[in-house]
Image (cartoon, rainbow, N blue to C red; front, side, top):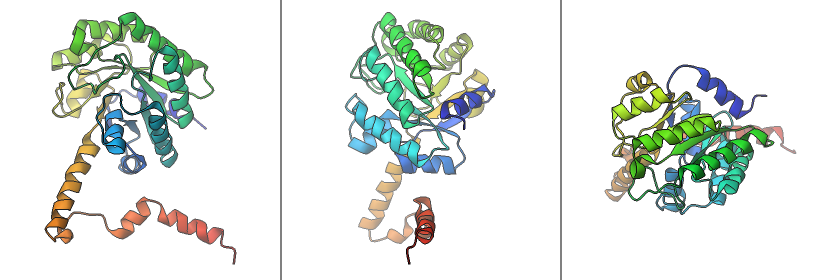
Length: 289
């Protein structure tokens, strides 16, 4: 049986843009797979927001992220999941542990970034990055762990250097990451279409665009992103923000005594979605009487 990493390699060989809604729990992952998307990323922002109701500022722990990733991959083994590994939760040796733990949890790839710990969301203020040499060594360590560990996994290397150090430094780091063997490259928060095109033109690896509405990067249509040369377009917060809007609308309707007007899936659909049909079939198969 092919590993998730092997399946992702095959997917990325196809010269098309992959739209990637990001998940934050097993149910959101199930909905993504049900909608026909082959690939998702477990968003650290969304996990921190949904699991802790706290900001993406390095507050969520390694153990909590691995636990959430394992639950997602266990619930939806057919969905290829990239795990947000933040800074690797420490130095290069911590990054190696993160890579191996994410691989064991079932991820197809792990994202490792060059921010100073504790990191921050890539589209918020106050970001700092480690030195270029330290960033390179952390990616080297991550790739070594991915290539020598007992579980197959790809490495997505991310730089946040654009905001604090400028585009040219960020691009130079991307070149370093390619030389260290990273499988996917992610230059976070380019500030215009010209920078986005320059990034993909310079990098001979699958490149990811991060589509954050209200963030620092333009949000082009998928056809334009593909023409720019991106292979993955991540939508890290769409499901989380949509669910917040829907829940607020539902709560207002309940407060107004008008629950019947809230758009909802019916009870039978909900039961099927969370697995009652399979559970009932198991009850029948193992009935003792």
